[in-house]
Image 1 (cartoon, rainbow, N blue to C red):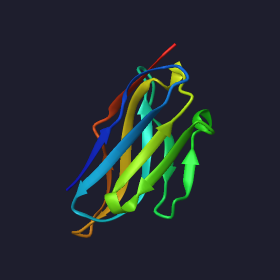
Image 2: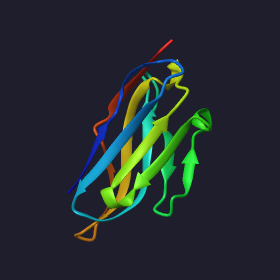
Image 3: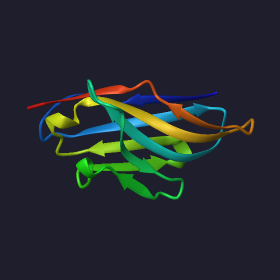
Image 4: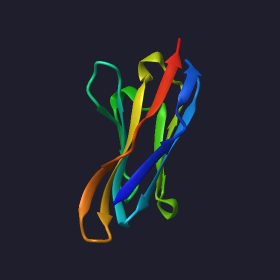
Length: 120
């Protein structure tokens, strides 16, 4: 089994910054893609940013130039640096990872979510 634990959410004023972290642990052989999704009240979950095992990144248009995703493979951790935050960035942010486990299973895993609230 694989667990993802997020941290770093909170309340910030518009224009401020936050850094989210997500650490993976458990039966991990290799972590493939990792990403951050978010879900605002009444809306569907959407991709914010993703990063492959080769450090290729992809961003939603709404966060390009403001958010940066990175990963530390030695720590099985993915980060999301969020700058110039806007009230519309308010959502629960979820970490996601595609993992090759030690028992030969490829699984898609989710964290429990962390709340990000941006006040105007």
